[in-house]
Image 1 (cartoon, rainbow, N blue to C red):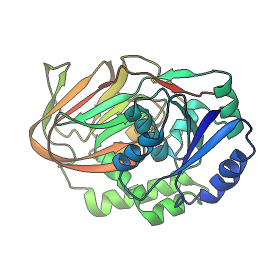
Image 2 (image 1 turned 180 degrees about the vertical axis):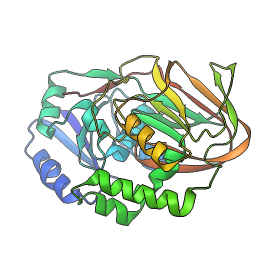
Image 3 (image 1 turned 90 degrees about the horizontal axis):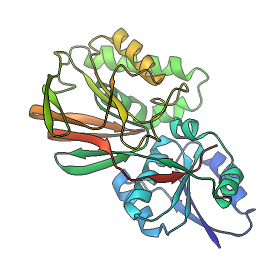
Image 4 (image 1 turned 90 degrees about the vertical axis):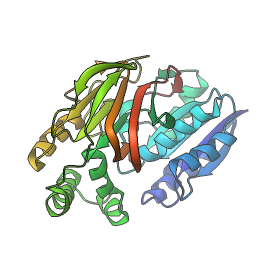
Length: 311
């Protein structure tokens, strides 16, 4: 009998929709053993470790939530080292995974799985000071954009953004408040450093005023617009550094990045080395984390393929 593992966050503002569209519909599936995993109020790493323990070979693991939940499920599957398949239902505030894979119903995902219609995704792997940090399906940022993303992690904002009609306008207003009231004069978003590639120094010193590093493996950041993706490339991805020293420049570059027009280069791996250990914010697909005293960040493809269900 086929196994379906449903993953969802019962504290999500859209949980009633998850219950109606996913949990109830799962009871109508025939020939499936359905398991449920509720995301705990814990770190991504802790949830991924717990989920990895219950994943078995040939499972279909479906994320019913936003990008943060989908990213956690991706990490759990890779950590489990089982030949499991990822399916995504976009039921969060930001749904870049669902836009990249194509929006489908639970029944459609299960049908494609039963027919053996899989595709391959090659995630990124991020290490911080030589230690594994996270597998990345879509995007990874360091610096100003990452820290600004913390605005949308606040419970009141998360609850509000799911209800407003003009989400983009609301987001811009919240970012403007974050920038002009608290961060306009700051210069410590991104410590001074240089870019190494494949362990060999390129001699590229980050320009003065650099505020961000972005690695893009998906179609776009935050899923506002469809654009070319790199998820199926075995080695290559897009990366670049940004200089967003004014709010309006941050807005323009941000929109371009959201559209998948990252002003960067194709690479097979980046190594960032800071001149002095610094504190940085890291943002992976809806999840923000601050790291203290960071000296080195490595980003590359894992070389491991993940089976996914695409429309």
